[in-house]
Image (tube, rainbow, N blue to C red):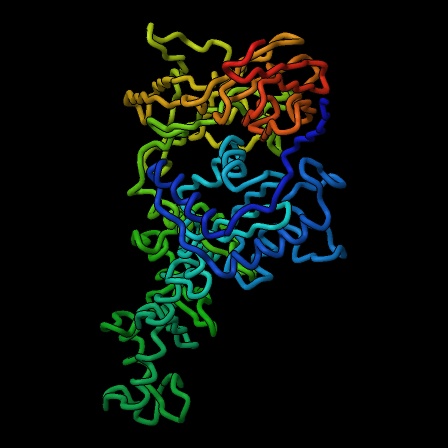
Length: 542
C-alpha cells in the first residue's frame, strides 16, 4: 500500500547557530577579500540584539511594512529602540552614528544567511567596508542583524584631537584666516600692533605727535623747553606745565625720533575681549598672511558624534585614508579561486535589478579610494571555463555610479550581473581592465560555483525521470519559467513507507535531495507549477 506524505519547503526554518560562529564567518570572508578582521563590540551586540527582537515581533521575511525597510523602526511599537541604525547606536551609548547595518531574515541557517547577504550587492559592500573595524551581531528567531562600526571615530568623538573640530574661518580683510592661528595671534599681539591714539593737540603746522612722546616730555621737560613766564607758550600737558612756543614750533617742524605720530589714527578691534590694533598693521599682516594662517579647508563639516560638534571633512577624510593606505588597490568578490560560490542572485532591498526576479551571482570590484583617485573602467568580462577552453558570458549588466538605479554605488565601485544564473559546478574566469590615475591596470581571476561534487538533475520538462544513488545528495534544479520566481519552494513527495526522502531548499529554483531507499520503488516529487519528477533508486527498474 502506497502512503502519501506531504512535504512543504520554505526558507524560514530555524533560528540559526551561535553568533560567535557568524562573527568568525564574516571575518573569514573579509580575510579572503584581503581586508582586516573585525573585533566584537559589546555595545553594537546590544544594538543588534534589540533590533533583531523588534524585527521578530513586527516583520515578516521579504515584506516591507508601511514603506519602511528592515533597517527602520516605528516609534511607539513594542521593542522600539530608535528609528534608524544610527539612532539606535547612539541611544545604546555607542560614541558615533557612522554605523553600517546588514539585516537577513528567513534563512534556515547561518551559512545560507551569509551567502544571501554576500550575493546581495549593497549588503556585500557593507561587509567589505574599507574603514570598519568593529562588529556587533545578533541571531533572533527569524532575524540576523549585523552592525559594523569604527574605533578611531569613536576615540575622536570622546576626545577630539587638535584640529579635528570645525571652526568657522575669519575674514582677514579679504583673506580667509583659520581660527587656530587667530587664537595664537591674539594670545601674543606684538607691541607695535597695539593701537595708540595721537596726542589730542596738533602742532601749528598740522603735525600730529605721539601721545607717549608728549606724556614723557611733560613728565620731564628739558629746561630750554619751559616757558620763562612771559611771551608765548603752549599748554600741551595735563598739568600747569607751559612749553615755550619757539621751542615747541621747532620740535613740530623737525620732530625727533619717536615724536611724530606716523599712523593714520584708524584702528580695528579684534580678539576677545576686544583689543584695538593699528589699521596699517592689520592691513599689512592680512596682505602677507603666512601659510599656516590661511584657511584652506573646504568649509564643510559633518556631525558624526551624538552632539552638535562639527568635525572638519578634511579631518574625517584623513581618518579614512589612514585606514585605507595599507589595504589592497582593489577588492574583488568572489575572491580568486573561491569555491562553493552560489549560482544566482534573487532579492535585495533596495533592489539593484528592479526589472528582474533573479540573475546570476554578481561579480564586484571596489577600488581603494586612498590609493586610486580616478577610475576609468575599460573592460569587465566573465567567461565560462571548461575542458575545451572558455566562452564569454555575453548577457551581462554592468552597474556603476551612473547606472545604479538606487544611486548607492560610488565612482570606485562596479558590479557585473550575469543575466542568467551560473552553471552548477561550473568554473568561471573574470577579467578587468581599467585606467587608474592615468595608468593601465588589469586583473584576472577564477572561481568555482557550488555543485562541483554533486549530481545536478535539470528539470526542464513537465515530467522527467532520473536515477539517483541512495544515500548520496543530488541537486534538483528547476529552470525558471515566466512568472515563476520561486518554483522550487513548495513540493509534495509520494513514496513507500520505509523509503526516506530529505529535501532542503538551496535557492528558489533548486532543492538538495537525499534519498535513502530500503525498497526498490519510485519517489514522486510534485511541484506547484505542474512539474513532476520521478526519482528511481540506482539499481532499480524504471
